[in-house]
Amino acid sequence: MGGSPAGWSGQLFAVGMVSGVPWALTSGDLLLVLGLACLFFEVLKSTNTGRSSVVEHMLSMLVFVVFLVEFLLVGGAASSVFFLLMMMSIFDVVAGFTVSITSAGRDVTMS
Image 1 (cartoon, rainbow, N blue to C red):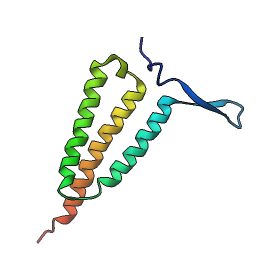
Image 2: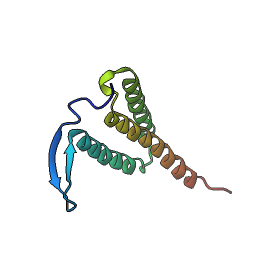
Image 3: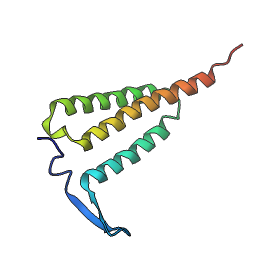
Image 4: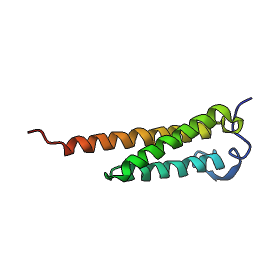
């Protein structure tokens, strides 16, 4: 029924843990780690204010909308890996707007 496409669940390697249980890294796990690294840099980048920040917010929103449409309509995208990547994209949108609003609030002075 559901589940990850075969490409995302393929084991890349396994590491023996001290507990004796092997920990396996799949290609989907690796993709999520790369997505988290990209999200980190996006949040850092959102701290810069300027004219380009509005365009970047719009592009981040567009990426989320594309993720959402694909998740709902494309069978191969109905996986937990894709869902978590989509959640990272909405966190990017919310974090970008939050940082921009917060920094804009500091720039406004009450007189």
